[in-house]
Amino acid sequence: MQSSLIGKIEKAKVYAQERFRMQVEHLQVQFHGENSDHTVSLANGKWHCNCDFFGQWSVCSHTMALERILEGMVPRQELPALAS
Image (cartoon, rainbow, N blue to C red; front, side):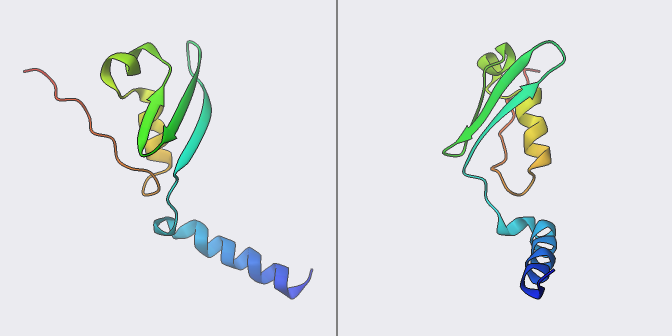
């Protein structure tokens, strides 16, 4: 293997550990949920999911899961205030 490729592989390993260097701007994911499949997207800092729960709350388990996976690379979602 050429030394230049080895160097790029090593640099990629370092970048993978330095998540602060990355900011996801646009994303679309097909999420295979327990009951059905959903399309989750991130555009212009806003999440969207086609599940019914997201339609009512503007947050759902699908968007929260992706936020955890991409922690530090996507904007944090505001959770709705719970009525007391």
